[in-house]
Structures are given as structure tokens and as C-alpha cells.
Image 1 (cartoon, helix red, strand yellow):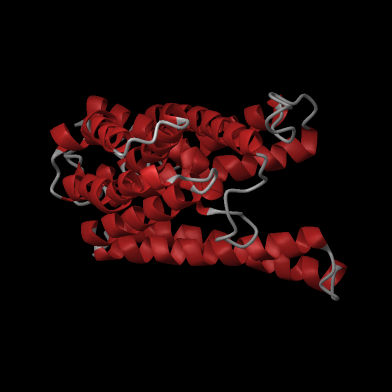
Image 2: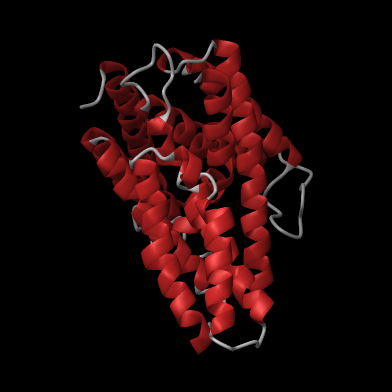
Length: 312
């Protein structure tokens, strides 16, 4: 059962979605009654996808730790599937892939569910790394062995290990904050996702200098600065729902935004390397699962460990 402050956060999220839906509807009525404007069509598709994602997220939180762990395990599964399909696989990879999807991934989330921090924190980077490398080598196929195994290890780290730190926030024991850990998930997801949106808005309003034009020409220095500052203010405004003081919430939001931005750049570099625009088409208007959570992947471990180190 969600606490009152968590319900208030959820209510604010739905209020924001309702306002966005109204704006989209007005734009449609005033500027595009024939539904031919690609920008408005894309915005409408994004808003509809956001409704679905927010509803699923809040239902999972309402169910509690089991629902949240299952939701992010499924998210990791879909994201990992998108990642490994970037390049063809060989018969020698099949058993390693089976282990990754149906043994390593479920075990990682099981370790979080039972709150075994000591093993969950090293299971994929140490033991899964060794196991899958051995399994791939035992298949006897040495053609591009390093590239093939490296792709799978990258996929597990980004799509499973990094993402699993989001539900792991529910396992933290913070003095005076019992029963309110769901707020930490709301804080993290809200800051990361709003930061992405605000960077886009600021970039459109006053963006002039691309940061890394070869990777993402739409990411500008002005857009990043405006989005990061706005996200820090959002984080500070949400301090009351967290165990943080206002300045701590602002600082954590700024750090999360920074790592989320770099995560977006890294995942864009992979897309450019593979010659693709999106990782998939699962989410209308957003691309694939990885296109939506790329920033969250890199921000989640940082946020988890900062909170665990300083507040537990």
C-alpha cells in the first residue's frame, strides 16, 4: 500500500500528464485537425506512451517490492533483447545467451528481492562475466570471440546490472524513512525523465553549441545547462518526500542529471556505431525500451550508492 506522500507524488505526476494531454489536444484542434503534422503526431504518441508507462509504474509500486522487482526485471529483459539484436549472433553464442536471459537476469533480481546486497553488487560484474566468457569459449567458436562476448557483457551491465539498481532502492534501510522508499524511485525517475525533456526544451529555445555533434547534434551546451539547472530545482522541490535536505536533493538531482546525460551520449555512440536511429519501436514516439531508459541506466547506480553510503 502506498503511503500518503507517495500518493501525492503519483497525483502530481498524473496532473502533469493531464495538463500535457490537454495542451496536445488544443494543439491538434487549433493547428492540425487533419492529423498531418508529424511533430504533433509524435507528441501525441509520446504522451499516450507516457500514460501507459506511468500507470504501469504506479501499479507496480502499489503492489510493493514484488511488483516493482518484476516490472524492472521485464524492463531489463526487453532492453537486453534490443541490445543483443544490434549485431548477428553465431551458434556458439546461443547457450551463453540462454544463460544471460534465463539464469543471470532472474538471479540478479532475485538477489535484490531477498536483499542480498553483498552478492547482488558483484554477481554480474564478477561471476556472470566469468561464467559467460567460459561458456562462449567452451563452444569452440573463436570467430570475433572478443567482440561477441564483449557485446553480451556490455548488454548485461547496462540493461540488467545498471537497471536493477532502481528496484534495489526499496531495500535500503534509512533511519526515520521506513515504508517510504518508493519515494526514492519517484524522485530518481522523475528527475531523470524531466531532465531529458527539459534539456530538449531548453535546447530548442536557446541551443546554439552542440556538445558532441557527431553523436547527438540536438544535445547542446545551453540545453544541457538549462535542463540540469531545472532538474536540480525539481529535485530541491521534491525534498519533502525524501530523506534529503533541500540542498542535498538539489545536489543529488544535479549529479543524476549529469550521469544521465553521459549515459545518453554513450548509448547514442553505440547506435551511431551500429548505424541505427533507435534501439527498437516498442514505445510509440520514443523508439525502443533502451531509447527511453538510456539516461536512467547510468544514473541509477550512482544514485543508489550515494544514498546507501550517506543516508543508511
